[in-house]
Image (tube, rainbow, N blue to C red; front, side, top):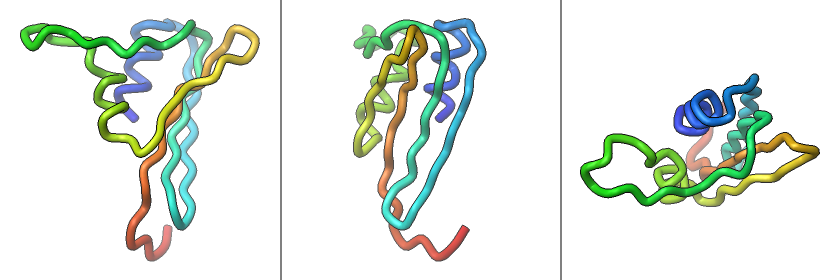
Length: 86
């Protein structure tokens, strides 16, 4: 979640809206901003940044983004195991 919000703040430099939903099977995080298309970078091992979406891509069960009228939403899903209540 922090990687998507950080990307929105640092790259889009617009307002950010965060939505988190959970059900019996999955947790879904969505970050909405007014920025452009996200890019998964593959920085050199010695580079100190630029790994946000790469981390999301590797840890999430699914992830993606959608553009709506110049705004975008980047989202990811994680499975929920053994959920006993909220």
